[in-house]
Image (tube, one colour):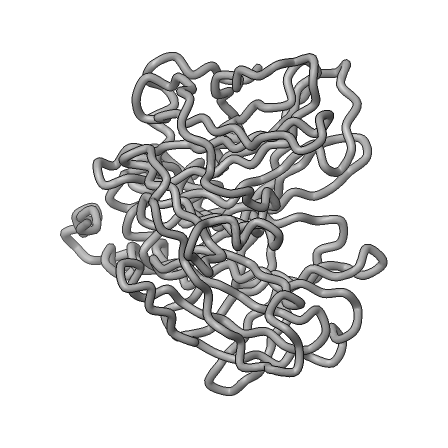
Amino acid sequence: MASQTPPAKRADGQGSIDDDVLYEILLSLPAKLLCRLRAVCRSWRSLLSAPSFIAAHTARQAAPLLIVHVHDASSLNVHVLDTSSGQVDKRIRVKTQSSTTWDHNSLMLMRTPHDLPLVHLPCADDELRLRVLDPVTGADFALPDVDHDKQHCYSALFMIGKVSSGDYKVLCLSMCTSVSNGQQLCKVLNLSGDRRWRDTACPPAMVRMGRLDGAAVNGVAYLLLTTIHRRRLQGSNGCIVAYDLEKEAWRPASLPIPVPSNKQRPRDMFHHVLAELSGCLALLYDDGHSFMELWFLVDPDKVTWSKQCTITVPYPYQGVGYRGEPLWLLDDGRLIIWIWRSPEFSNVLCMYDPRTMTYTDVTEMPNSTPGGVYTGSLLGGGSFHLLHQGGLVQVQ
């Protein structure tokens, strides 16, 4: 999108900065400062709020923002973090029901399309509720409750993807935790349509339900099978199943995963993490000690995997029960990684450069959980106009 034309220059050319230069300076400033500069005068507010300026400023961002949940015994807080500097650009206190008892697991930020953060926020009467969070205003909008038998306790995994029509669809997998061998149930909701939960088929085999066990890429939700169910599918050595969000159906074939280059440990002894990076399904192996390896599914139809890099974990993180979570691949090839560590250590946001095989720690984040990478702008815009259409209720 073209940049908005700057205001016309003064006829005498005296006493002012060239408007083209000023416009470029404004584009180079962080969004947090630009929000303050809107108060300078009406013309600046108009310029800095224009969709064309916001689009041009967003395109200049060297790295995306990261939505982070900061655990606090007395409140639920979300920080919007600059991944290039580690600076907190915005703090949001999420509204809760005063009668609810909260712990650090009560708020779960989900890995979602990069312009629409979702929050899994259990409420006193319903464990399966989602809110959509607007990082610009701090407002959050409640999605309809997932219907389930409230006589039992359920665990749930929510995934959201964007299909070819531009619609956002949410997949909910739930399992009754109070009944042994409970079946995994599935529902789907069109966030851009009627916003009603509809029953859909159960997965062909039991899938993992951790936040690192699935990723939505190009309208398809990919999920890791549990170890004991990988052989359940007849004639298959697959480890990943796929749900087509557009067709609202499970794909018949499961996907095999590549063999890590480190042959010293059996493949099942590695941690597996799924993520979306640069429009591809990414699989990260790590051994929990000193080795990580990143693979891309470059051709989903032919199930072609390509190894991107093998990573030696820095000495300070070795042997402390770490897990790596890939968050974003920058244009210059550097990889933004969240390093999970044992509870007695702070988690670390870092960048890895595969060309030089070096790490740069961006910031330590004690008592924090990463949510979605956010490619939108704190100046406004994004996909939140969807929330004001069709009856989504803003939480007061």
